Structure formats: structure tokens, C-alpha cells
Picture 1 (cartoon, rainbow over the protein chains, first blue to last red):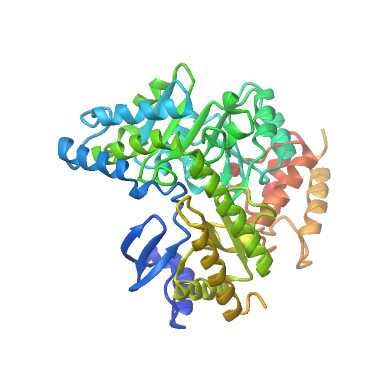
Picture 2 (picture 1 turned 120 degrees about the vertical axis):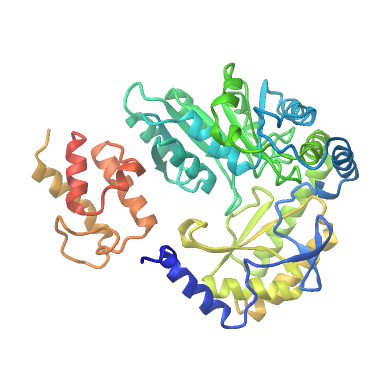
Length: 400
Length: 80
């Protein structure tokens, strides 16, 4: 018998080797208690959270919590059904209305997760003879959506406008074209040149989908994302987003002004063939989304945090993923996986949680310590974070 | 229209800058196993071939191409 799991032997061996040194498993951390958007108890130790994507700190917002409790009381713990059968409650419609208001768009469709939103929309839009032209560093959910739809997949070099343009010109005449981009790329925290890319895509007659998962709530004048910030949101056909970052719960969505958008509810398999979100989740999401519209002060503080951490880490001598702070993600580049894991553990001992990101999730086979800031991090906490990085960096000889 | 042997020569010339091990490249040479290219090298190389012949080699097609001979055949078939 062929053991179907033997294909993972190399990974199992690599993990065993790393963990045999007595190191804490970076992918098995348990948060025993969560005090706030920025603090949790991990291994009995009070830990500052700097790897949660909880950009706007909405998870403990009193209005959000109250809305969730009320929905739990009034509608129960779950819908036990698909959106197209028994799974659409008043709360699901209210949540879609909140998204339409937030983005000033005609249509909104809510999915169980951001992953499923990409999976569903991309696979339904682009089928067998269509072409998807996408950035090589696209998120796994985008690649999986491409695979599910059986489209022809054409990747181009990360953020390279000319490479995109060249490939668009080579697509056979008459074929359907979908260009898939992200506003903020989550591994390095860098922003896409959407202004140029959307123009090039439109000139070639392609439809454009932008995943704004890591920009919603704080990039752009109204927090609608990078496409808004760069003035091209009206030329974007579909925006994909998530509730599990700035919105502070779980779920995913697509918003669009396309006049035929509503038909997708009947033909999109990852929307139809799964249960809808629980009433409490859509209630918290709707409340949070509407509150994010008034978040100008929080947005400003989040940017202050991002600039301060970026400048501080740079001054300490760490190598960062971007020259300047472009988003709320700051990626610290580690020399290799072993030192990255050691640094990750040293930070945890200091009382700081960041994400350890490793190949194949990372571009260029890099090992990264990915930091995501929160609008609820105080200036004091950012100072403490920098002290912890300094101590851990020296202990592991990553900085001198 | 170029001949198959011309396409073959042009593809092999494009491989050389990526042939870090300096192995002899023949039709049976495999990209992953013999040239030991990782996914990033493959991306760079595919982009080079695409630009040289002004074609698209989709990821779907790339999945079917394991060795140099298969690549030359695919490029030739695309009318390059």
C-alpha cells in the first residue's frame, strides 16, 4: 500500500528537526485568554499581539459585542442552511446593506470567509476558455479560485505593470480576461500600483478584480482601500474583502456595480453549497463596518503606529520588506528559517507575538517575521515592542 | 515561421544563463530534477521565453512541461 501521507515526509522531518531543539512550535500557539485587541495570555504570559490583522481593533468594541449578543438571543446560534435556502436572515441582508453603504456600490454578496469569496467569485467569473492574468505573489485563495474554475492562468512578475501589459496583449483575441490584483500584499505589506495596472487592464478590455483584504478600514479617504486611495475604484469591477481583519470577526465578501451581479448568488458554488454565517457574526460585522466609516481618528493613529514601528526597526538595523511604511503590515526579513524561528521564540519570551512566515507562503523563499499593527496599540506599546525587538535581535545575533 | 531546429536553438540559448550547474542540455533534460530550478527560477525563465517568442505559456501548460524537448515542442506549436 502506498501511504498517501508519505509525500509530506520532508516537511515532517524539517519540523521534527526544528522542534527537537526544544523550540516552541510557532504554528501551535494557544491564546489562553484574550484581554483586548492588543493583549492576550500565551503560555501563562501576558503578551502584546503584533500579528493579528486586527487593524482597527474592533473585536472588543462595545457596540459590536452588543449587536452580536442581541442577534444570538433573537436569532439563535446558527442558520443551519445555505444562503439560497433557509440561511438568509434579516442580519445577512443588513450586513450586505452595510457593505453597499461603506463602498458606495450597488451590490454586495457575503461569503463564509474571505478565502471562499475569492474561491467563489474567481472560479465563477473565469471558466475553461477564459484567461486570468494575476500577480505571481497572489494569495493562495486566488490561486485556488483559478484552479477551481479551470481558467487559463497567466502570472506576471510582482507589481510589474509592463509585464502585465505584455501578457494582456498576448491573450487570444476574443477570450474573456480577468485581471486579479491585491491592494496590499500581505507578506511584505507593500502596495500595488493599481492606478497604472487598472488603466492597462481596462485598455486591454479586461475585467478587474482587486482583493482589498489588508487595506479595508484604513487606506483611502473612506477606508475603501488602495483602489480608492489611488483614484481608480470606479474602474474596478469587483472588490473582494474580508471580515476577519479590520472588521474584526469572520466572513468574506464581494462588492460590485456590475448590473448582472446578483445572478452570481445562484451560480457560485462556494456561496450556494455551504451554510451561511451565524446571525451573531453578521450582526457584529454590520455594526463594525458602519462604525469603520467614522474611523478617521483611529486610521490616523494606526498610520502613526506604522510609521513609528517601521522607523524604529530600521534604526535598530533590521532588514524590512519595504523601504517605507506602506500599510499596517511591517515584514522583518530573517536570514533563514532557523534564525527566524529562534527570533520568533525570543520575541515570545519577551512577551510579543508576531507571525512567523516561511516558504512556500512567502515570496523569494524568504523567512519573515510579519508584524501587523492595530489602531488600539498605544504609543507606549509601540515603544515596548521596539525594546523587545532590540533584546531578541541581539540575543539571536540578528542585529549587533 | 521558423523551423523546429531554430526554435530548439533559441530555447537552449535562453536556458544557458539559468544553467547554474553547467550541465549539458538535451531534449530529456528536466527543469526541476536536472537543472534543479525552483519556482522563482521557473517564473523568470518562463517570462524570458514568453518575451522572446511573444507568446503566453499558461500555468496550465507549464504543468505539462517537464523537460526541454516538451518546451521546444510547445513553443513551436504556438507558431513561434
